[in-house]
Length: 327
Image (cartoon, rainbow, N blue to C red; front, side, top):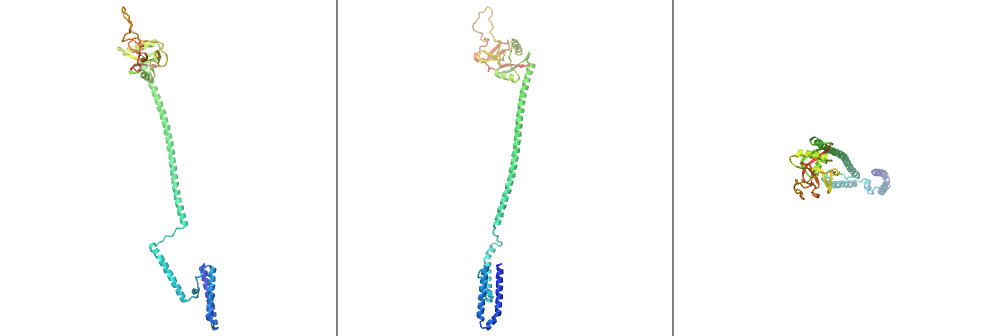
């Protein structure tokens, strides 16, 4: 816009010069051609200066030399322009040789665009991470549910195993009871069965209980005599002591059955009486002393298989045993 105003001012001044040139011959004939021409140039220069100030242009642009259109001045101006173009070419030549395609400097808009692109990439990465975390959470929930199901299944299996064990125990007890009644002695509501395994008194009681019974606990003389006959028939011609369910562990001399009931009768062995005419002896027979004679060292009772008498023994001694089962 400023260039257009300057061009217009130059055209106006040229027109004014032409007009004054038309009036110039009259002044020359009047004898004042040189002074009028100088005055006209000053007036044009002052007008151009005022116009430049009004437009805010540098005062060096469009001076009087350029306005007058002097051929010498135009040559000088063209020479200056040529030199300026050569300088510009000299200045830009190294840049062109070093980088024929110089990259433009980034603008603030380019920087903002780059930052927004990076933020978009980070947001996409975070979105992918959220998706993976959601997948992991889903997997953890599935694994937790599977673990809970396994625990429930293992609990059910434990219950089943416990039920099987109880069923096995019951089956073994029932089998022992049936075996005792089929193979042993049946007497009233009880069945008795001899075992030829050597066990301590406590181990014998445990084995009888595992088979659904207890060590034999004869309730009266009739049962004791029946057990004596059964043992004599099973073990004859030998004499073997067989564990009964009788002991005085709780208190010396207080004999109880395994079920805690107190024993109401006894069949202790007694030394044989002296022959007729022989002098009685105060000392007991060394091989068959009166029973019980073990004191606190012998607290469990065994029945002899030859005559059915009771003997006290050390409870840790390993003997045959007889079990009884309910019928």
